Image (cartoon, rainbow, N blue to C red; front, top):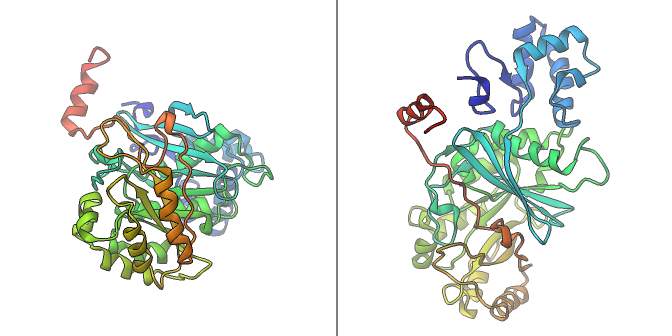
Length: 385
C-alpha cells in the first residue's frame, strides 16, 4: 500500500510520519530520537516546526528558513505535513461553506464554516465518522458509526479550512475564523482523548491560537465525561437538550435513557469554573407540535434555574426523510419571549447553509464501516471493482 492509500495521519514502519496533531512534547521526543538531539535542542526544533505548521500554514519543510538546510532535508526524509483531501466544497447562498473531507479511502466527514458567528466566523468540526446516538431529529444520526477521528484528523479540518480561507499567518488582523464548535458529525465525549488533544493544538498561542473560551464542545449528554471535559480542556460546554421531560427526551435523544435529565443537569451545575462569564449553552431544536409549547418554555426555565446558561433556540433544519417539521416563526418567537422574560438570553439561531444541507443536524457522509477482509478484497480487486 502506498503512502497515498493510507489515512493522511497514519504511517507504517519505515515510512514517513505526519506531524499534524502531535503535541509539542511528542514533536520534541520524535526529533530528539530521529536526530539524536539533547532535550533542550529537541524542544527548540519542535517550537520552530510547530510555528511553521500552525502559524504560517507550511506544508513544505523547505519553507522553514530559520532551520538549516541539512536539518530541513532530514525532516523531509522522516516526516511530512498533510491535510485531509477536500473532496467537495459547497458554498451556500448565505456564505456558509461545507467541506467533504477524505481522511482515508472510504472514510469521509463533513465540516462547515459559518461566517459572522462568534467574533468573526465559526468552524463546525466533526469528531467521529457517523454517530452512535441515533437522535431522531438529526441526519447524522442516521449514519452508523464508522470510527473515531484522530487528533490529527480533527486538527486537519481546521488547517484545510484555513487554507481555503487564506487564513495564514494565524495572527492576521482580518481573520475570519475566530471560533471552533464541536457540533459536527459524532459525539465528542465518546472521543474525548482525541478531542482534548486537538483542542490543545488549536488553542496554542504560538499557532492557530483560538482561545479555549472560543472553543465550544457540544454533547448530547455523556454525563460521566462532562467533568473530564472541563478539567482537561477548559472549553466551553454546550448541551444538546431539546426536551424538558424524560419521556420526550428518551425519544428525541435516546442517550437520555442511560443518563436522564436530572443527572445531566447535576453534571452541568458541577462543571468546572462555571460562572456568568462562562455560561453553558443549552441547544433546543424547535419541532412543530413536539416540544414547542408555552408550558415547555416555562418548564425549561424551571429546569435551568441556578445554572449560568444561555439557550439557543434552533429552528429544525429538514433533511430527506425527516420525521419532523420546523415550528412556525411565530411559535418560536413566543417560546423565546417566555425564556427571555425569565432572564435567560435565548437567541434564535438563524439557519445557515440549508440549501447545501450544511445546517445544524444536516451533516452526513457516505462512509460505511467495513471489515478488514472487505477492504482487502476491494484493494486487490483493483479499479474495476
